[in-house]
Length: 151
Image (cartoon, rainbow, N blue to C red; front, side):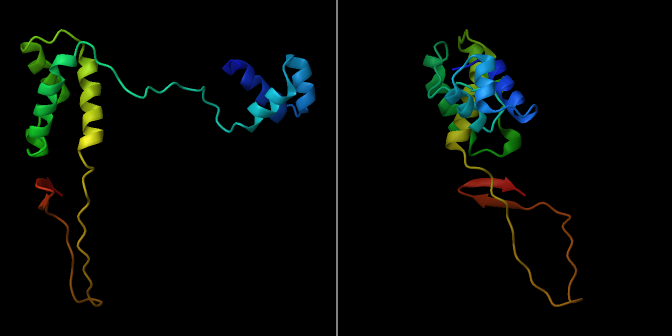
């Protein structure tokens, strides 16, 4: 695999200077198959490594406690839920020695997995012309999956 700088050189020589793939391969001393491979790539971002599973060595023994707190919180309204910082401080009082970012990333992943995205409430109304006026000046509270959501 080439470094990102060489890939950008290949793309620049082809797209801006109009050189052929063979000329680029000869100039940069790489295979013409490699040149065609990197010209076919659409993205300009460097390839990134994505972990399949995140490990939390210091958070390990506190994960069940944190999961229980987060599942209990799902029943509360959004304003009464604790922030990641508050969860971190609570774990600190119980003896957690790790970093805040580990707690915050665990909470973020937990919410992505176990909490559904909030639904938008829409009530269709049909009136004939000049029959009714409609004003949306209030917030309504709706119960979705046992969770009170303010819309």
